[in-house]
Length: 125
Image (cartoon, rainbow, N blue to C red; front, top):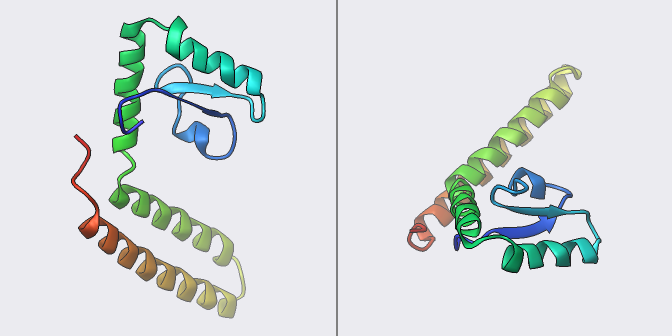
């Protein structure tokens, strides 16, 4: 996707949150090799060049949304929401443990983000 090429992926896990069928790639049923092959053939031969280029541009745009900064911010947000949802209704001592874990995880993600944002190669062009 970062290379501006539409992709084929399984309709499972987090993949459908990144690949939008018929926009920046194609989705197939998990484990269905025949459907996967048909999708690849469609992209390589059946889809017109203009459509492939359009899907490639959309794939590139989606890939650019997931740089280190935005990915770690997303992880931090998910982790924070999980901590709030899981610990806000618990006894106070458990809520304190949850806040401590959330704060430690946030510091870890911040350090991770700083390291990779400062040491990653030049941005995608």
